Length: 290
Ligand code: ZN
Image (cartoon, rainbow, N blue to C red):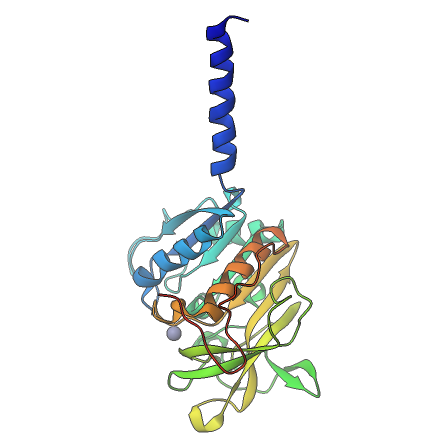
């Protein structure tokens, strides 16, 4: 081997090794473009949070605006380990709906962030994937998920789907401490003032409640322990729903950051390798990052 040849081999090795170190192992796709919420403000924060795990490269697929032709909106879901929905708006083309359902059925990960649970009330597969959600089209359908005598049960009584009182701080109580997303978290921890979603309802099949927050009646709530973090098994796929995080301000909450980052990893891989950070909130004190 000549000296020049040796150098070339080293150079190629160096470039490959650097790429291997630099390239995150997983790919995430955030879907947005329409939402009754500030998606233009929250998507960049969600992207930064997923990237800071060091486990993902992140792309964003933005749909046409409300009322525009959606027929060309066809994200390549199958190219990703996890799809994070920050979308609530016009129906997607049938082929795009089928592509997402097929992707999850075959083992893909899906994360439903906050108001994305109010999307697509008319789409059966979406309702099955998210388990419970929000919106007029879900009213009187499916079930609420209620805590009765230490167990989560379906409650089919008719009523609205989705609601919340004024912004308020609330304590999140872990109900499944052995799930990868919640394992190692304290049994209870505080969220910053945020919307506390209640009355979510839907098919609620293959749904596991990871954590709840009590919604007091005198603060506009249901007087129930409302599911705020939960998973759904859909085919071979993993779906995680995080009901927290109304605006970019609430996304500074460590309760949101950590449960979101862990949920994205779990939906993508079935495991959670992230450590619980030292600034994680306690049972009586919320925690925020700048
Ligand atoms: Zn909201």
